[in-house]
Image (cartoon, rainbow, N blue to C red):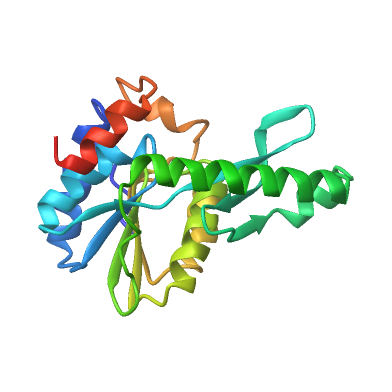
Length: 214
């Protein structure tokens, strides 16, 4: 796993170009790039262009803690694939009915988002070499759910590629994929946006434009 000491990224597109270069330098060949909307698409487009492969999406939604929806206790993908942080759920004594209802709600939201972004069925992944891309990894919750969804589709190989990640999260994710390419793994990681000069929120309209190659 690369641990580059270069300064922060100008924006997501710049990060994507650098990530694409890193994948090419390592001779990592894939058949398709899957980006996690919304922030992953501006990164995924230059990666897909660099590797000369199609770009599609992998959608997951966080399952937030009671009274703190931004704190992920798990995540669920558009096909219902789920990852739950059982240690946190047990430590916080999160009710089972809350987990079940929120999981169902977020799975439905993920399905709707996938349908909004994609006019047709998802790309077949069986026997394919897949690269999963996001703009960074903090807790790794959504990445875990997407990885589970991709694994169930039977790919030949799965690579996770991100510009920046927390050491703990990326270490955990390494065990779930065949290879990880991460440009920055800062020991003092606090948030993904900390490593971007420009980290504005990406709208659905802007994110979807990258699927058209714009």
